[in-house]
Image (cartoon, rainbow, N blue to C red; front, side):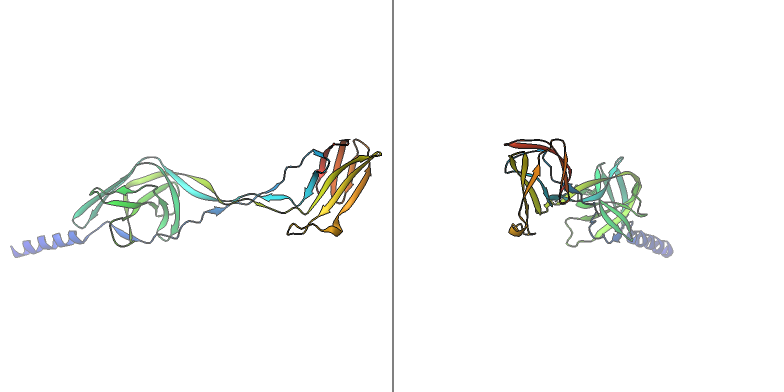
Length: 251
């Protein structure tokens, strides 16, 4: 009789101490992948009025800095039925899109975008965990209870692996940057069969360099390709008010 009671007591104590829950260390936030920045040339005009710049050198725009983040979408709900000592805890996460929270020795973490509740009504936050680091399925759930004082996260196995479809999102992390104008060629009009221009250069701070200001006079020959410094342009028509041209190469 005593042996039976001792065995029953041992069984109760044993199962009272067992749990499917394991503490997990969440990784540092996923920084994503920085995408190459593009250099965009400022729109060049093909017609300019007297006093307007025909084209400039250095007026390039560096496109906004962007970062790509890994996301996964769930094919269906993810459920977990967990034994914790003498209690049963269950989760059900409806399908949605999750964002990567990074990887650690425990696997790859995907953050669920909403709070969710356990079967006993406790509000939690967390997501899905792929213990082998893959992006096509998750085999665990990770979470922390919001009413707990600590910031400890827990993990447990899903009832069955959740199938995932990987994709990515792109976010802008900084505005576009514009390089200052280094030089410009301004149309000054036509006189006695000659077309006139004003060439100016600027410092990095945008201040005019007086010693690098130059009046340029060229014979007017419609359809001719002209060259000045590094620039090449074809003048189609020049008059007292405007000039029409095609830019072949900028300053």
